[in-house]
Image (cartoon, rainbow, N blue to C red; front, side):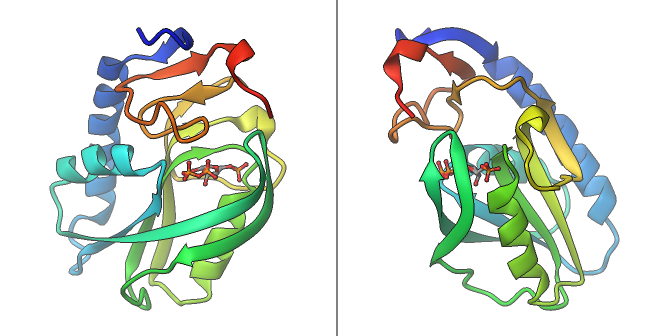
Length: 181
Ligand code: PRP
């Protein structure tokens, strides 16, 4: 275990088993629509999860990326979101699945989903690996959720603190003495 991690919350095996389950659920939902799934991966945190998830889908899919910046601190997003990199392709008439690593207050995703809705996709759903329901301020209900987790400062498998720890293969709780809000 990395020396900065107080405890492992989700092991690599737990994550990969869940990814497999989610991929099966998503494939079942979109199979037979007659058009490819249009996956939108939100940079940067979701890239590790999305790479594993998308490789396990057994349906046709396109992948596009969006980079956003949410003003605020790590432990509290403001909900004012700036698009740093927009999608390369239009989503009108597409079955869109937004892939995110975590929904916390819900502010970022609420803002993002409202914006995407205005582009008239045929359908718009959300898949998150982690959900911290205790922290919710704005109503966001992901259709696909990997794990509900307690309100602890987690890093790994895409989640960072000061851009570190994203490359850990598991999700762990950072030692509290190592971070400042
Ligand atoms: C994380 C996460 C969500 C947001 C969730 O992104 O990927 O976008 O925070 O927080 P909320 O529900 O309180 O709005 P972050 O800003 O850490 O960017 P990153 O993915 O590049 O690390």
